[in-house]
Image 1: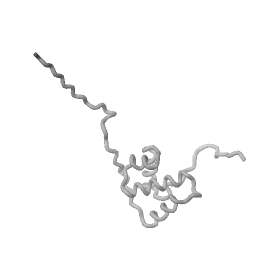
Image 2: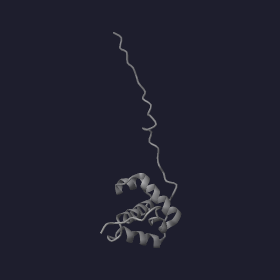
Image 3: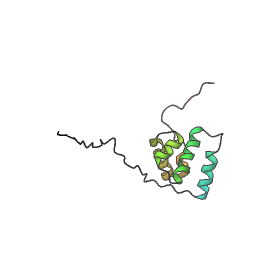
Image 4: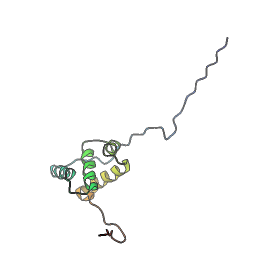
Length: 109
């Protein structure tokens, strides 16, 4: 009796390969920045996005990766990456909304 056994080696496709996404923007906060970001992260009267941006930077300062921050805050990694980079380059001023081109938003009464 002859028993033929075939072995298949499955090579992962490029989409299956897990590449670590370590951010080159390491966040280190001063005492004043830590205090201000903590205040913003807990403030109920600020806009939702301002609070989330502050939380993103605080978590980044704790050494978390963008993927982990995105999972915790229920957002996309690209968004975390954008705000991490802006804070790294412009510090607290980078978390503010930039002016947009075109006609200003108008809310109906």
